[in-house]
Picture 1 (cartoon, protein in one colour):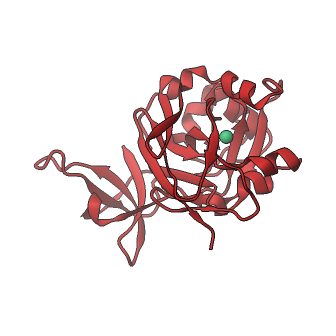
Picture 2 (tube, helix red, strand yellow):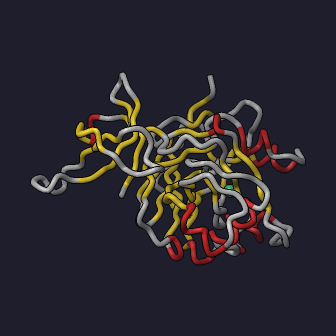
Length: 260
Ligand code: ZN
């Protein structure tokens, strides 16, 4: 199932994207009662997908990132693969949805794209053992872990480098039925491919990441884990259109504009 959050102008709801049986190929959003984590309940109202504005598909309390999780990217960043997984946070205020503008921050002159598979958590959890990880995963979406590389280099903590407003586009929806073990991940800028790899090349798998993170902190429904970016990270400029595509999910597109 593909779960979205959407606005029709005067209200915000979660929804499920699908095609009516009598109109295959015609995509509609079926509105949900409340949130989708404790079970799907439909209101009976639906809207053509083209008539709604898609928002970030989740409202995370936090986004937890994992750094240097593809060998080629670790090599391009230097310093090799960390022995203990490198974990960082992006604040909830960094999250934006599909087609929302990314605001180029005035505090940086070197902003990079990072295409990543994002894991969405479905229930409150801590100290999750490996065998119970599937129970806490709600689904998967596309993420762009946008990073002010100059600040990341000069500041020991990455709160500004990875936490500035609009630095975490997510979407377009959460795919709840997906095997994440070998999916193509690509990033294009103005249609030109910058990153292209497969999730099978992750150094640490999703199960290990969730065990490692929940040994330290509680995760809440809607929280997001960014699983690391492949090689090929590079600069974004004002005016660029950046698109993250993940096999089996879809494409997350955002345009970079000057922060006014
Ligand atoms: Zn990243």
